[in-house]
Amino acid sequence: MSSAATPPDTVTFCADLVRNHDFPRYAATLFAPAAERRALLALYAFNVEIVRVRDQVSQPLPGEIRFQWWTDLFSGLVHGSAEGNPVAAELLRAIRDFDLPVEPLSLLVDEHQFDLYNDPMPTMTALEGYLAATSSALFALAARIMGEASDASEHLARHAGLAQGIVQVIANLPRDSAHRQLFLPQQFLTGHGCGIEDVFAGKQTPHLNAVLDQLMGEARQHLATASSLLAQVAPPARAAFLPLSQARADLDRLSRPGRNPFAPQPVSRLRALWTLWRASRSREFTK
Image 1 (cartoon, rainbow, N blue to C red):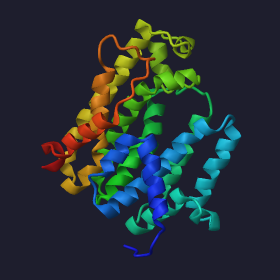
Image 2: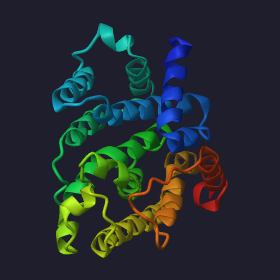
Image 3: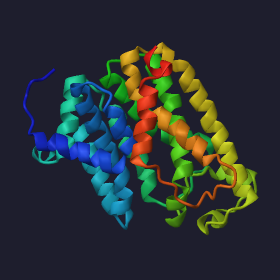
Image 4: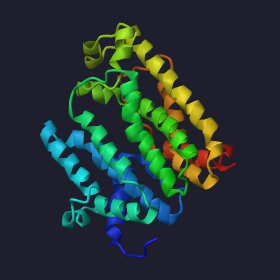
């Protein structure tokens, strides 16, 4: 690894960004060695920066410009200004120190172009493609940082990302519907006779419940597959997949009978930390 010193404020900046906007992933980094933790925080801070773009712009064009800056960075077209961006500086260091491929990072940016527009997610296949390039890619890159770059870890990362991503789609329904964004597959809505405008209006109907039940079933299948694949990666690398434990807990919470899918239900940081700590000591992640 490189021994080049980086000002500590860039590390603190990334840690604060992830802690404030993606606490489950932040908590998961607490169980990684120091060097790996720094790289994980850089990766997750980058993801936070990309995901937050849609909340920071009122029109697609400024978002496109921000995304293009990151695309240019990965293409080697951004030079001086990169070091002035603490997230970019830390991410470039992680790429160098852990030999991370830049193509998945660039694809992650490209996939989040969808967030800038109000086009509905058309099919389950389209949603899986979106999640594979975003959530699954993060798991795969985190596994590389933790020393695992193999077909087994890639397979595990795909299912882990799909499970986590589907759960997040369900959890984010209150926010997305308020912004007239639809990540629920339109294919499922049509199949269950659920109108898009009813979703945007926040109407809890049996048709919507059927859509969410089907999505939860998909998430459970991916969670089960991911759990069965954990044993195929080395125990130290399993720390990269600790956020799965939070996804499982979130799915259980979101599946409770009578829950209003349009009522935000934030998880306390203490509960999230407890969930991840218990998982870190379980046989699933250590044996």
